[in-house]
Image 1 (cartoon, rainbow, N blue to C red):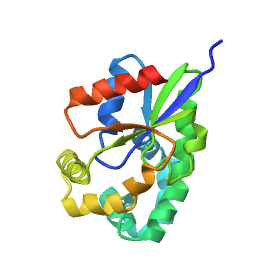
Image 2: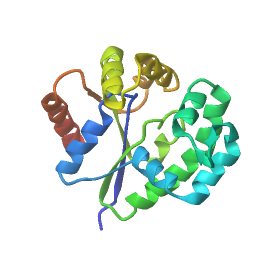
Image 3: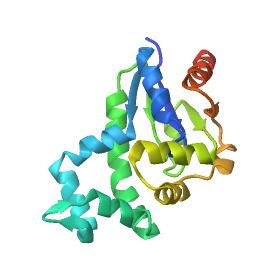
Length: 190
């Protein structure tokens, strides 16, 4: 039996991780994202109750106000740390559960290095893009202001530091076709 491979896909907000994963999925690979897992956890009552206990100021009419939570954690380092400490272990546990038994699995893990999870994977693909393109892409995709995107960028590993990490780098400053061609080159190297 072949050894299974778990490959992390990381990069800053707006770098093109989701575009890469969509391409890998079309190519027939198993893909999963931390955002997808997080959204599934939000459907669970026990998960939401834990968040309510941690962030009572973000509870409106008995429910967590996700926008208020987002504004809080991206403006308060201690709140962000508390959210990450609560959510990341739960997300990673579910992520690895979903990858179990797959010959090769790609997992989108935006905060891979920030969380210290890189050692759990066989390889890491880092998608990199100019800061201006990331801000524009994330603003257009999420309907958020440039200031909100910049605040999120500050909570992520600086690109200069990312470039020093042991990764396979995929530069995404061109077209989708160029991204896919670069992805094919990386797939051949794996």
